[in-house]
Amino acid sequence: MQTATRVYLARLNGLPVFDPNGDQVGRVRDVVARLRTSSRPPQVVGVVAEVPVRRRIFLPISRIEITADAVVLGTGSLNLRRFEKRASELLVLHDLLRRPVTIAPEGRHAVVVDVAMDANRLGEWTMSRVAVRDQTIRLARRIHLEQVDWDEVRGLIAQSGAHATATMLAMLEKMRPADLANALQDLPDARRNEVAAALDDERLADVLGELPEHDQVEIVSALDRERAAHILEEMDPDDAADLLAELPPTEQEELLDLMEPNEADPVRQLMAYGEGTAGSVMTSEPVIMPPDATVAEALARIREPELSPAVAAQVFVTRGPMATPTGKYLGVAFFQRLLREPPSRILGGVVDNDITPLHPDMVMSEVTRRMATYDLVAMPVVDEQQRLVGAVTVDDVLDHSLPEDWREREPGPARNPTGDNGA
Image 1 (cartoon, rainbow, N blue to C red):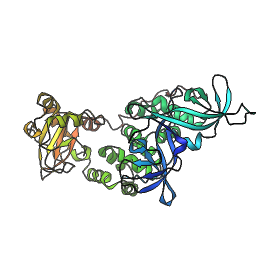
Image 2 (cartoon, helix red, strand yellow; image 1 turned 120 degrees about the horizontal axis):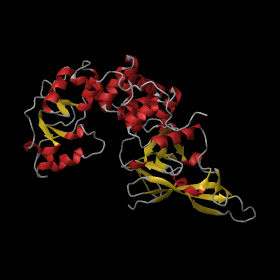
Image 3 (cartoon, rainbow, N blue to C red; image 1 turned 180 degrees about the horizontal axis):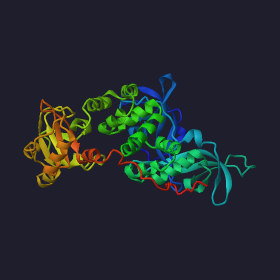
């Protein structure tokens, strides 16, 4: 099936949504675009579909295929969390169609009839063209329609508090999560919560892990419960466990119950370990592969961009199952060793197994001593049955070694990341 590289969005309204088996699961009701800087057109991130019982949900653009007469899901699973528009987003059909605009440079008045999105080579969809009805030609017998580039149209985006938040997000979007966390701490509480709530789920999850615990709690408490649970699903399990530990037990259980079971189970396991032990700070999602995997497969796995440098520095080799707790732990293959080996060699032949793994109940002072002794950036954590249950990384050790308030901003003149002096 040929994939279109330009799609006019008004025609999507009402199209049926089918799962991979050909069963209809809903209908398209709108298109969601994310605002960026004023010089960059919004990026289309998905569609809003109405499913039975009149619930509207979000379908990411990366998981659907748009055909001439339908939208088809690339996977059979649906996230049924109710869609809520954020401050950084547009509902294209609701917000833009029939909007009065001005066409530059001549200043003609027009009304938006349709908007087109184009795909680039990376599969990202961006608003590109606007179809408008000219309002200046009043005596013409036929309606005069024309297409213009997005940047030729003035008045598409309303100037509002939501747009101000979107502008701030655009300015902050290139920051590393730790730098963005620092910028959020410089904002008044209400503004910080507003900006945080407008971030993408994945982005907010990364930023929460860089904030002091009391800021994490305030931001999560300001979110609706379903979205808070989804943010926790996006976080690393150890960070999610640390955040939940700061909440009252009733809220912990409420959020854990709202999470998908396969996301909540690792978090529950981490919360069961005593504070200040290897089990309480480890990640339960290191890179794990079977002994019959090849060096080439291992190198491809550690190249995945979402992995942190410490997690990607080695591959832990175990018997099945591959999810923690795994089958029997066999050893570790460090990435320097992988680079020196033929791509076709199997991992079972290149593992190091002469370093004694950590135990979940080992205190952090002993964990730190062992990692320093062997100059490692990560060490395996193995239970009594010799199953891999996680790995302690150097960033986990640093977080534990530094003072509890090390993430707090030092007192001083307030800094405004937007450059606005508040006037």
